[in-house]
Length: 417
Image 1 (cartoon, rainbow, N blue to C red):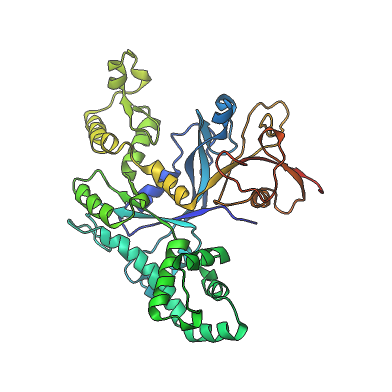
Image 2 (cartoon, rainbow, N blue to C red):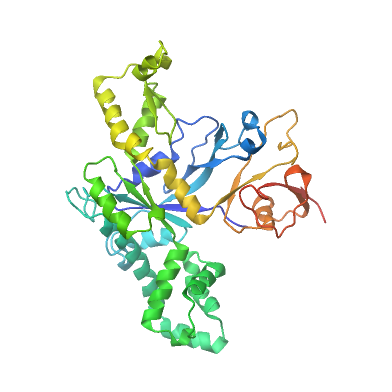
């Protein structure tokens, strides 16, 4: 059965990985039923912000998710996160927690690399000033590439001999070696298609093998670069440098500690704040806007008042938000995740529960190019499916691809066709 997407968070000590993980999983300021789940010490549930199908049909007031929440058509969908610990120089050689780091890494479908863009922590996470954080980005990739290449080259002679003996294709042979990294045949095929190699595998040079390993790393471990601590005065010059070196589409600017602080203040009744927003309102702000009661908010002390004003200037107004919500959204984007809404009734969009007017109770995330049949297997398992309906009761073929707004509202009718 297709498994749920898993996004791994990586980062050196003191880069802010734990703060980022906490800001992605903390549901205290959300509205609705949010089960915060720690699956094991390294796994947790984060919440991805998506546009809900309820908005298309003017049903936002009746959308009641079983998990997460939906406010005015913006839905928070649970997604599994993995805290990948042990990133240190020489991880591929087993230094520190290197072996565990790489073993955990292979389970992830995408990575979020949390980078201390302030340059105030060195390669080992020790306090410093003037460190170049672009080194950390290259270092993570080099560790993964060295790990995969090292494993491949230790038995390359045997791999070639078997490849020739069984008359295998390059995809078959490489998948046999890369399956341990959580790869699939389609991942290997896409890797080789992008390279367009002409020579047979047994004639590959070391340079060609390097190209294959690098291309496979890009395909198997797509990475979002979360430049954290953007509120630090040294961050600007480092952001500018990294933006020239990396694909801008892979970069998200964020301040995890600012997000955590704002949510805490909102929970305690000192500010009005919606996560991901550019705005935060204090009691004074609301009184100035004409609300004599200040929204019922508590009075801030001078220290927190100054901190919030600085946070507005250094983060919210400059960058548009703390960037935390965008980190998960970017990971979902590079994976091409598509939200699908399974319903019992494709006309009312209900779940079939008697006397319930709630709609779109469930939402699952599937990978791009998934078919209706793939979704059915994910939701229904091995139960026999007689036919499938889309929105409006229209029958949908199993081989149709799901995408946002197309074949993404489905009802699976159990029985023999």
